Amino acid sequence: MSFHFIFLVYKFIGGDITFNPNIDVKTFNTICEEPKGVQLFDVREPGELESDGRIPGALNIPVGEVEPAFALNEADFKAKYGVPKPKVTDDNVIFFCKSGKRGLSACKSVEKHGYKK
Image (tube, rainbow, N blue to C red; front, side, top):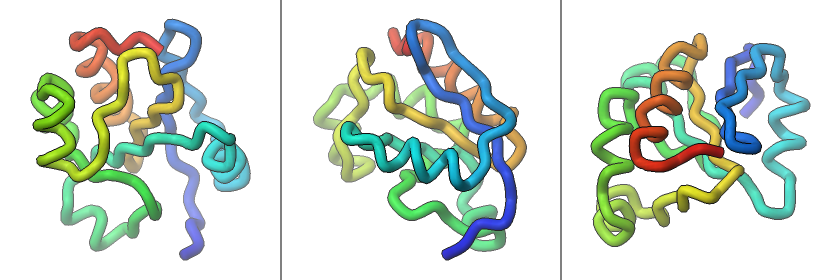
């Protein structure tokens, strides 16, 4: 699948939420190829995935469900979403959406649960 759009990515790095509105597909692919990998969370609504496409490997948790999802304990998160819950110390977590607003909102939501990077 080829993506012909630029999207906004919010990533936790070095204790601050950083925002890079200029990420393109090539940069995104480079990030995804890092040895530690990346944990992608698509915070768009399920209907948007059907109309706008998906990024392989991304887990869809709509923005309104991010805060309660990250409030779950590790076992419940894995049972509900089928993947391990990111640790608060992980620095390879990316939330994304179509324009970036919901990605930032998701970052702010998980900050309440101790995520800083």
